Amino acid sequence: MAEEEIQKDKFAFVKKYIYELKKVVWPTPKETFRNTGITLVMIFVVGVFVFLLDFGIVWLLSLVMNISKS
Image (cartoon, rainbow, N blue to C red; front, top):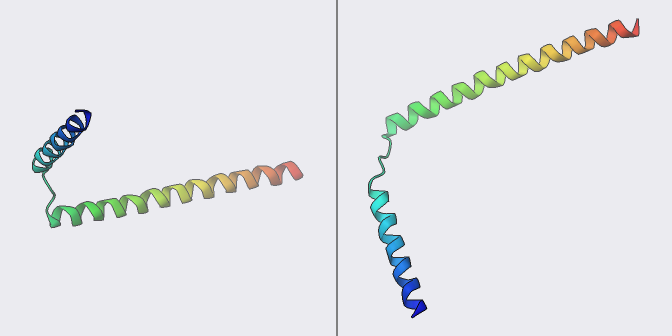
């Protein structure tokens, strides 16, 4: 009896899964390409920002370290 209930639960899950999957709106290739481009540009912009921030902090730290050695 327990096995029958498990089988029913499995089939109910699969039915619900298929029903929900039919509601998914997939992006068009054009939208996918545009979103990929935006993502790559943002990765580049954030990377440059982090690089400049790191460079500035290292520069300030080296300036402070050189002043403390004098």
